[in-house]
Structures are given as structure tokens and as C-alpha cells.
Image (cartoon, rainbow, N blue to C red; front, side, top):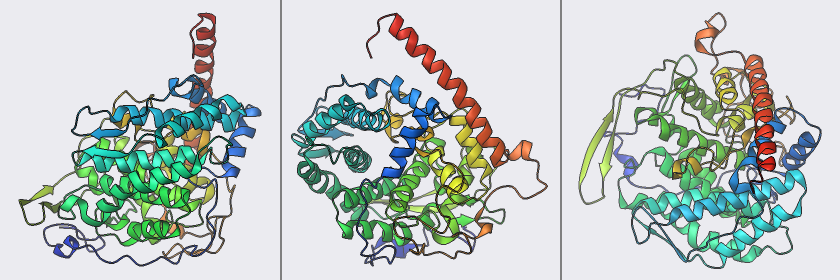
Length: 479
């Protein structure tokens, strides 16, 4: 049974089976949308370029990771398909799509940091090729994952080149609104005609990321508002109180998918962080919503993934189709972990809470240090799981402390987070770091030590990558 501080999602939560009407949020309502304004703002892109040019660590190590990736080369050529299949279909060809999208994103990001136009031209050519050919996403239920994951990623790549003279902005808008978004919107409304708890949080969060990214890129305020409302109050398991149903007395927020497996829990945290970051860049504070509930859940997953002990409250959820087969499934304990497993998700989240907000978050900083310098698609294996996040957080999200005002996002100062906040935008007790006097050697280093470790790792990795690249040049290996 879930504790009283949590939200019931299980056999007794039958009201969740019927979606409720979604009201418009009050955050930043009516404010013009910011461009670029998905995962990266103009200030972010300028910071990356300036830091790399100055040789600042760990940005240089992060940029070395980017330039070493085979997707980030200006010689990449797109292979667009009219129909993309995931889960079933002939052929199951979705790898072509995600490889090309990551190549577009990496080339666009490399252009902004280096200033070299060839990389922007390559990104534009890839995106134009796909927007001119792709008409449908097909397959099993996995088509909803394809729409969510590759929809938000396509929008982010396109956002970086939206002002390029050769980029077909209108065709990109049509692709997002007519191919990716409808499947994601349908999933959030109907959950593939299954009971609302049938799908774990990452399904909702992928769709939510697509919905929000599409709304921002296409200047569709109604889509942005729907995404924000679903994050706060949606019926599915991806809304914040269903993904993190219990907040324990030690400040850790139980991530419900930790009862499933580590890989999917990392995916969920990465996707929720993506949603929060894109919203923040539009003046909407989801990071701080509900007394920074996401901070507590991210700290929980970081501690657990590092091999630490975490509590888990058994929960039972309904499964099956509406009007068809049904059953229940109980997750009774936290799943096992491989402390060596990592994904490029931690730098963005850790930098927000510790650098933007000045909150302690020792498990996040340890996880970020361990993952640094973060790579991107192609650096974490050839399968789809290695392409679920755009990555390169060490380059993109490392920040100087208090770089932005702590009262909230900069586009619309004064926008409400919807949660209870004190001075500085977030109540101090929102931290889920160990209490004073705990054994930090066992539970996680302090933030300063964690960031110092990240800088050191970044310096070493940056040097190794530079030597590797020089060796490739000496051997005549083409990038």
C-alpha cells in the first residue's frame, strides 16, 4: 500500500481509468514563446561557444565528446523513409530515423559551438530530407514511443537551425503537427485503448516531451498548456505525482519504475528532466512544481543507480485493454542495479538544481560526475536505448553557480511554479541530500566535491579524446 503522502495508482485507483478534462495552466500564460527555446536558449548556445573558445573545463571535454561522435560529421547523409515502422512492420526501420535525427542535432550543436557553417548545412539537409518524405509512423504499440522520442528530438534539432536560410520551417512544422504529434496526443488521451495504468511512466513522458516540443517549435500555445497541465495533473503514470507517488521522510521521492528495472527508470528521469528543461526555457517552472518533487525523485534514482539503498513501497497497478483482458501486476521491491550503467541525463538536472537554484543535491552531482563527460547518440551502444536522450550535457548544461536568478525562469519572471516556494523560488527543504552528520562516504559526496570530480574527469577525458582525434588524423581516418 502506498503511504498517505503518495498518490494511489493501482487496483484501488479506478478513477484513473477515465481521462479528465485538461485545464489551461497559469504559468507564463499568454507570453510569447521564446526561440531558440527548447533544450537550448540563445544564452546557452553563446555560453557553450565562449567557454570552448576560452578552453574552459569541462566544456572542452564535452565538446571533444561531440566532435569525436560519428554522427557529428558534416559528411553525414540522410536516408529518409516514407513510412517508419517500430515494433512490427516490414521493414522495421526506425533505426534509420533516430540515427539521422541525432546526426542533425549533433551537427547543429557543433555549428553553434564552432561557428562552422558546414555543420549547419548538414543538419538542414537531413531535416529537410525527412520533412519532405516521412508521412506515417506504423508498427505495434511501440509506434507511440517512436512518435514521442523522435518527435521531441526532431523538434530540438530543427529549433537549432530554424533561422537558417535553407531550412524549410513550414514543412518541419507540418511534419511535427501531422505525423509525430497526433500519435503522442492520442496516447496521452487514450493510452492505446488500455487502462490508464497499463503503461509505465516513460510511455507518457515520451509523448509529453513530443507534445511540449511540438507546441514550442510550432508556436502552438494550446499544446504547451496541455503538456504543462498533464505533467501536473494527468491521469497516466507519467504525471509527476504518479511517477513519484511517495515522498519519504528523508526527502527521497520514490520513482515508481524503480520497481521495474534500472534502464527504464533512467529513461523516465531523463525524459522528465527534458520536459522540465524545455518548459523552464519558456518561463514555466516544472522543476520546482510541488515543492520540487522531481528533485526528490531524481535524487532517489541517482542514489539507487549508484548502488545505494533506497526504500520502495509495494504498489499494484491494473493492466489490460478497456473492455477486454485485464489483470494486475505488483511491484513489491526495488529492482537490482548495475552501478556501471549510465545514460547522459544527469548534467542537465544536477546543474539546474545546484547551479541555477543553489540547492544541495549530492546524489545528482555524484551521478553527473560519474557520467562526465556526457556523450550522445551513438556513444551508448547501437540500439535504440542509446538514442533515447540527445545527450552532451557536460557541454550543454554545465553552468556557473547562480548564473540565473533563483526566483524562476528568466523569460517570464514571476511565473508561478504551482508549488509552495519560499525565498529563492524553492523551499530549502526541497533538497533530498543526506542530513548533516550522515556518512557521506557511503551515501554520496557533497556538491562541491562532486562537481570537482566532474571537472577532473572531464579534463582527463578531454585529453584522451584529443589524443584519439590526433591519432585518427595521423592515420588518415576520415571523420
